[in-house]
Length: 533
Image 1 (spheres, rainbow, N blue to C red):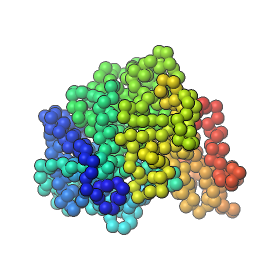
Image 2: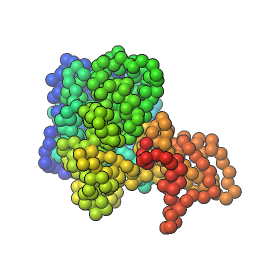
Image 3: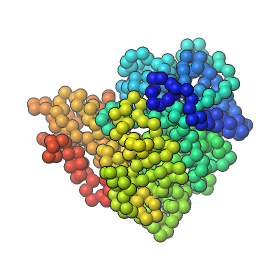
Image 4: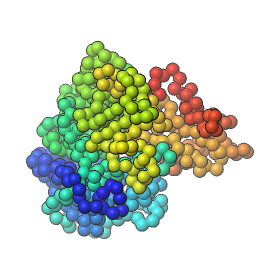
């Protein structure tokens, strides 16, 4: 579809290679080799290609049309990958839903996207049913008997395993990547087929990022999140994708050793948990490990050095967003080694831009600032999204003349390394997930005792950052911190719940009468060199 008018698909223009067809070609090339495995299942490349073809045919048989949204609400499992490949091949818009969202949040995503089909489990479908509004999506359920009309496996069994991938255009919608808006409303970045192909090129052309046949990439983060963007490049490199449906540091280390995992990606929280698990004992025997990528949140230089001590010279970092279709800068393995040897300050950097990504630091007028000066990061290139789904007002705020204004404040040194120093946005990054204060405040304001809420980021040793809240009660109202926590637990995903809550007589305000969020937050960050953790 044309992303200019989501409701009215336009003929394919500026044709590009369908990334689903491209991935399928490599799955057939390595068809006899194992392509993907979990704790309980394994699949060869040719079978994964055929099953995704069957799913593409099954979706079309359900009446799903080009550019319709197909939602998937599952933890890491092979079927999530089948959905991704099928959507690419059939020119449908994959709409991944974070498996950790609460039922009301899932229902909001389904309503906003207008998803026509939802792939999930019966248990998850039943949990969200009371929260659904409007016309519910058709269900494909993974764990029901074959006789069930909603059976995923039965739908595949009835479909042909032959499918010719549809022609697609550069601007055709491929993925709706949901995040929460700074206004507290849902926000979905429209990633096009051109964006996804640019992502493929970024990772395939990266000198230290591409794997090889026989390598194994362990994806422990949600593949509906940043981890999933590595799927197509991994398959096209002949790698085996090892999916983890949960993260338990000790078990993860043992699996890395036993299955000789060569590549993995973790958010800094996970890296910290692994290092804590290892403690002061012997270094783990991981001779196969070639690359340990980290990103989605900053990691302290001291923690980076600790990880290098334990794992060796294998660390890489990426910086990006859903609006830039994954990372646009990288601190490579070589960069880490050089930083440790003679440029320690670079360990606080997020690296230098990828070849096709134009990353600039600009002033308020959009002009590039001098090296060392602080400005806002703006990004342009083939990986920049097409805008926010159904939200032109939000789009024009950040997408100006094809340049995405990130809201992140940074400086660039004379060698081109980018250093993030703060966020213009008030977003909290906790364990690699984004939380916007106004979204949490909107829930807190539903509590009958709360008159005013100010939500902000606080440092957290385990998660990097966590959500904090200062609350003013209504006159005469009473409540407890335990009751407020239970209230939030019913309405917010676990990572969005405030971990520090204080009842205060009033919150600080600026001269215009607006809540001074940074002033409320400042004491928690006192003594730290930067306001991201």
